[in-house]
Each structure stands twice: as C-alpha cells, then as structure tokens.
Amino acid sequence: MNSAAPRSCFLPDEPWPDDQGNHINAHGGGILHHAGVYYWFGEHKEDGDTAEVGVHVYSSTDLYNWTDRGIALAVVETPGHDIERGCIIERPKVIFNPPTGKFVMWFHLELKGHGRKAARSGVAVSDSPAGPFRYLHSLRPNPGVWPLNVTPAQIAALPEGQKLVGTAFWGSPHPDRAKMNFLGRDFHSGQMAKDMTLFVDDDGAAYHVYSSEENSTLHLARLSADFTTHDGAWTRAFPYLWHEAPALFKHAGRYWMLSSHCTGWNPNTARLSVADSIWGPWRELGNPCTSPAPAGRLGPELTFGGQSTHVLPVHGKPGAFIAMFDTWRPEAHRTGGYLWLPLRFENDRFTLEWLERWDLSVFGA
Image 1 (tube, rainbow, N blue to C red):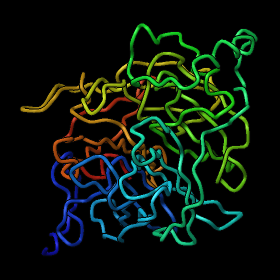
Image 2: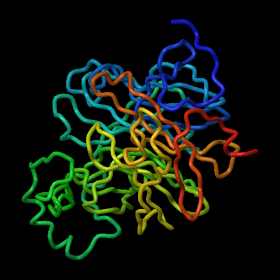
Image 3: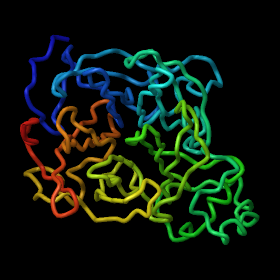
C-alpha cells in the first residue's frame, strides 16, 4: 500500500489509514502515553471475532497520524495454549508499572472452542511500550474473596449460589436471571471477567474494571503492586443493571465512567456514571450524547452507532479528554470504525456532541 497523506484532524468513523495506507486494525482498544509517544493497542481483526493474529499496536505523537508498530502480542500455534490461534482476545489495555519498569497488558480472554464460557483475564508483560509482550497467565479474578461491599445475606446465600455451578447463560438482560446468585456461584472458582478496562489512579494504584456475573454487574478490582494479578480488594457496582464496555477516568477529583447496555454487536444508549471514590457508591447520570443525529447516521440515543472502549486524557492539556468508541461491523470485523469525540464538561457532568471534523484546538490552549 502507498503511504497515507498526513492528517491534521479527527474524522469520526471514516476509514483511518496508518502510515502505510492501511485502515488501522486496533479494535476494542486503549491508549498508553509514555515518554511523549501515544501507543494504541487493540484487537487485530480478520472477518470473524476470533483471534487469528493477536494484539496490534500503533504509535503517534499527535494522535492524528499513526505508525504501524506490528503485533504486540501474537497468538500461538500450540494446541491447548490459552492464546492458541482461534481463541478470543478482546479489549486489550496496557499500563506502565514504574517500580518494575514493565509494561503490563490485560485483556478479556475466551479459550478456543469454549465459546464465551471461560470469561478469563489474560496478562502479558514487556520491557518496551510497543512490545513484544510475553504472555504470563490467565485467571478468574479474586477466587475465594468477597467484595468490600458484600452483605451478610450474600455470604449466607453461598450454598444456594453453589447450586448454579456448571450453568452458563447468555450475557444479556433477562427477567429469569435478574436475581440469580452468580456471585455465590463463582465465589470459589473466581469471578467472570468480560468487557474490561484498566485505570491508574493518582497514587499509582491500578484497577481492573470489568463486566461480570454474566454481564449483570460491574466489578472494580485493585491490582497487585506489580500489576500482574489482583490484591484482593474489590467491589461490585450496578448489580443486575447490565453494563458492559466500561471506560474509566478521573477529573476534578471524581471518578467518571462511560459504559453501554448489553446488546451484543448492536449499538445502544451510552451510559454516564460518577463516584467520589473508586469504590463507590456509583450513580448513573443518563446518556451523555446530546447533539441531533447527523444525516444518514444513528443518533445520540444509539451513541451515533458506537460503543465505548477508552477515555483518553490528552497529554499536556489538563481537563481534556477524548471518548473513544468502536463502530462494530460483525459482517467484516476488520472494517470496523473508530469514533472519537471530545468530552465537554458542564453542569457537573459531561456531554458528547457529534462533530464531522475536529482537532485538539477544541480544548483550548
């Protein structure tokens, strides 16, 4: 392919070529800023939803133009390996651990041939931000550990929950599952972890935020000092309210989160939540998308066709954040688009308006 012409703005959901002229292949992604460079990690998609290649990484200094840095974490050919070709790798996120000097990647992992029953988290590390990453292990979070906000009734109901061991359900809202004891079912084996993100707080503590309990409840779990496992402190948020696609960030001393409803590949209404503590209580503020639907595009009630994946703080611009969404195209996943929009804070919340074309000047000097 020929090199792409340099960009000087964002064009939401239009084809986004890398330095070689190829549409960027980093779906469900997240961005790490390190030493003046942004690194965009995401799922390398072919036409299906299984991982046939691995996690792709691109780099940029201006956020408009991206250089293909290759495959940061490659699938393997070893039969039975956690990341054997044909597994499912989704929503990879990378953070830096200063004490160890390691870059740590987490992702939602489904084992090959198991559908979406495994609901595990994969972990890999690298000595450099673009990789290559070395796979460490996969896990189910916090086996044998109750959340910080557990109730006596939930502890007492553990035997009843254990009767559900071995059962699996489709992870979407359904009245028959509205109060099933998934917390107790998975207490000993570890909790499910599906759509996920990572967040590093001002004090250097890192958190793993993921959809759990058959997608019915979000979990927020603190990571160990080296960021490669959990330290046992975790909490449940929005029980039986069916959030997925969490994207967490901090602004003005408060914790903010974008998420979505659970409707598979189909777009739905974005959800905005806020808390004064990472541990909650969290409260929903409704749909942050406000502007009318542009011609020929889904409107704000369907997040303009996108689903949240990451909220990016713009380096050097305090209070400037970009909401990153994927527009999924399950008939040909690799063609899926990237819908980036600036957050606008007003009246103790933030809003998202559709912009056909925009650049970082919207955030001011």
